[in-house]
Length: 189
Image 1 (tube, rainbow, N blue to C red):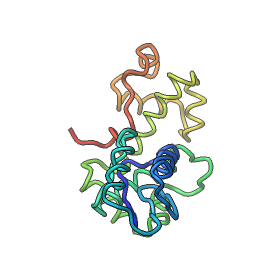
Image 2: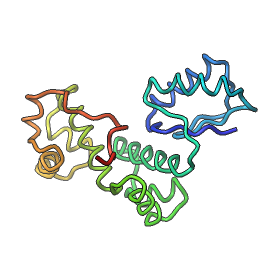
Image 3: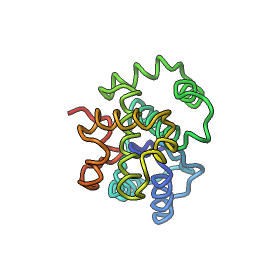
Image 4: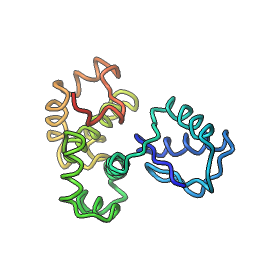
């Protein structure tokens, strides 16, 4: 039995899911981004308990295969964007290979269901990482540009201002209250 989980887009989400499954005594075969394969069947009561437990971490059980695909796309974008040094191909090829679909199909599907493009979502994710690195790790723009694979610091700074409405230095003065969670990225409205 496979359970599909929305907003499961990072390693810590997978750890949370694993911990909650173990607390409830639910045996599983594997945990991947957006899904967990359960050994056998589980009762509706245990399934509901699991759903409530993971909600505290911003995760939701879903029945829709469409939403699962969107969450997988977001997860792979996060993996690609935040671990770029380990991946040697461009994002479109990476997504196509990981998900076994043509990039154009993925892009149309993503924008149709989220109201934003893969590129816009990727940029928003990068900018949130820039905010984290500025506010929490106190890195310089040059260090951040290198880490996130920007060719020029000026490109990073301009993109940051375009997305946030402020320069990175202004953000540093204001602090972390303007950061967004991964679940808030790409939401319409």
